[in-house]
Image (tube, rainbow, N blue to C red; front, side, top):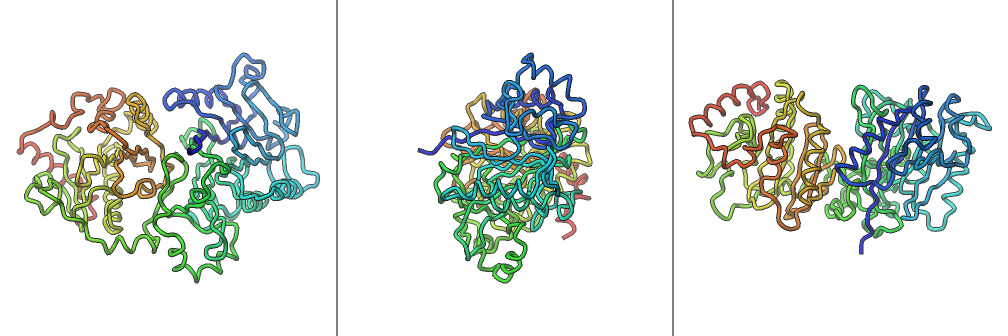
Amino acid sequence: MAAAPLRVLACGDVEGRLETLFGRVRAIQGKSGRFDMLLCVGNFFGSTSEAEWAEYRTGAKKAPIPTYVLGANDQETVHYFPDVSGCELAENITYLGRRGLYSGTSGLQIAYLSGTESQDEPAPAYSFSTKDVAELKTSLLSTPNFKGVDILLTSPWPRDVGTFANSAGEIDTKKCGSKLVSDLAASLKPRYHFAALKKAYYERLPYRNHTVLQETPQHVSRFIALADVGNATKKKYLYAFSIVPMSLMDPAELVKQPQDVTENPYRKSRTEAQKTKSPLCAEEEPACQFFFDLNKHRGTKRPSDGKEGGNSQPKQARKPPQPTGPCWFCLASPEVEKHLVVSIGTHCYLALAKGGLLPDHVLILPIGHYQSVVDLSSEVVEEVTKYKSALKEFFRSKGKRYVLFERNYRSQHLQLQVIPVPLDHCTSEDIKESFIAQAQEQQIELLEIPEHSDITQVAQPGTPYFYVELDTGEKLFHRIRGRFPLHFGREVLASEALLALPQRADWRRCAAERAEEAAQARAFRRDFQPFDFALRA
């Protein structure tokens, strides 16, 4: 029987804003259920912490979840941490210590290193030195059969973490961060590594901990930097994920490699030697490894850029299957209501939804017959992505953000429903929380897939599922195992919390005359024209 995953929250710099943090945690738990722990990296205390902190220190207030924090990063906050070996600071708030390994009763192993890098020996109370890192590495690497740790907590970023990876925005990863933390991460091979201090959110693509064709496959590592609590620009400071302790996982599951995995950023010389072997890397990672068991829950899936040679070539050669009967959505079919079509590309087309939730409710559809996104060939996926980008730009020009969903259940042709929501009406967080809350009411388990993920890593062809994607890249997924409400996506968006159009939740009640539909299509086509890449092809 598979072990139950732990539900974990990780947080960036709190800087003494305890009420903001714990208020947010309470809201999340109220809508998504209880989490097992909260892990805080970066500056837990700030220059104005004393008043808020006194209420927790004296027991007047209590953290809503077991909270584990790192130590000081400056002299000003050292006095908050009375015992360098770790101690309870307040009820439900624990200082882990200067460095070490926290092992919970669940088997989860969390390595931690408090402070910032120092060249001095001994290091100041708010810093770590080469000796500190060496001693931490030695204590863990000497453990029999050491494979790595589940989680690594540091305040500084590791130097060079952005090598071979997606952009970290304004943060120059070649200049910022700690070389000692890089060395520690390379040695401890954490499945998750959290850091802060830069007031930025950055979720790096996962990276390998082995050299392809030269070493036995190992698990991948994921680095996530989190912003400061309550920041004005609303950068992400809380990260939710589920994890099964490494010691309880099936070894084959543990070492599966996602499609978007990169080389290890801390092994530059070895990576250079691997460049000439890149065609073999694809052969080393067969497509079957890119799927995972959802019993492992979130945090084990990430994006695909569609360029993995071993996986994309068979898809390019594959022709779409033929429908077994009349299809309302194959563009060549006489059943298609062509007056609703507003754009035609090479592999996909756009059409207004019949009985749409709103006049600009649009569908992205493959021209050929494909049942779901996971069945698409790579060139169709590429054009779907282009349409999503064009629609995002189009709707943003009108002060809206889109919500996309797919129901691969009791449908024979892929329909990506794209519905705009006014930007000033609700945030992406509001939309996510509405889907999760209504799913819980109907006992539907919606799992959040981290940003940059790819649905093909979550569901194999033929798997029934429901999938939501926001134009921010945030995604929710439910694997359908029995019955599923056909109008669930529309019902959530039509609810009072979002569009407040409950009477339009069922498309059959929203039918319009053909002339009205044609007029709406002409208006959409005219407005969308400046954004329509298909017209420029």
